[in-house]
Amino acid sequence: MGQAIADFHRRGTASTLRVFSPMFDEDEIPVDMLFRQVDDMPVLERCALDKARGRTLDVGAGAGCHTLELQRRGIDVTAVDISPLAVATMRQRGVKKAVESDFFDLNESYDTILMLMNGIGIVGTLDRLPQFFAHLDRVLAPGGQVLCDSSDISYVFRDDDGVLDYPGEGYYGELVYRMQYGDTVGEPFPWLFIDHDTLAAAARQAGYRMDVVAEGEHYDYLARLAKL
Image (cartoon, rainbow, N blue to C red):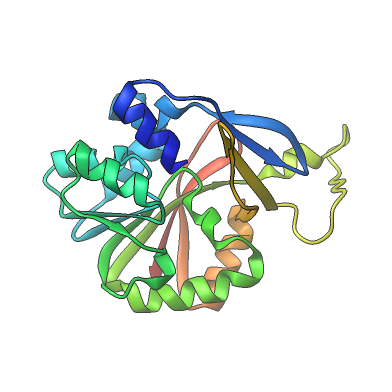
């Protein structure tokens, strides 16, 4: 993804960013979508940006479209991404604070943590949720909030009578993806789609409150997490 972002920024075009998963047909991510302006963002993302306050962290910032909009609004925002090419591109695009790091390696505290475009997917699996909340204990400032969106993808596996018929093992939202850009094929990585009830239960167990702030048109939702 970092190479695709760098190429699009440099040339105004990029090859197809292909996405593979054993559970679904091949898909693709339009690279220009990672460079969209606020008017082209989904309602849930615009809602999250409107609710950002204080010192803000944009997790998995990619090309920096959310960070740049928050900068324009005068918010003190830091973008973090694991891709060095993505971070370099964000800096070239005018992002003032862009950090190359894994979210789980960060130690500074923030008032708002944004995890958009199903950003909570970086947790990977349900059994890593306790680790995620333990890390929030370290990086979320007192009175702080996490704004994250996800989707309940159970609809994909329901039959005509609405009965869940999931062919795999474990939780239906635990997926594994692999990306390909040109001849470069990435390593497989886990990605989590989590329904709001499951997220709320995990949050309560960790001492957090989860509120659904807004719902999208296709089983997606924006959640706010805050320490109890």
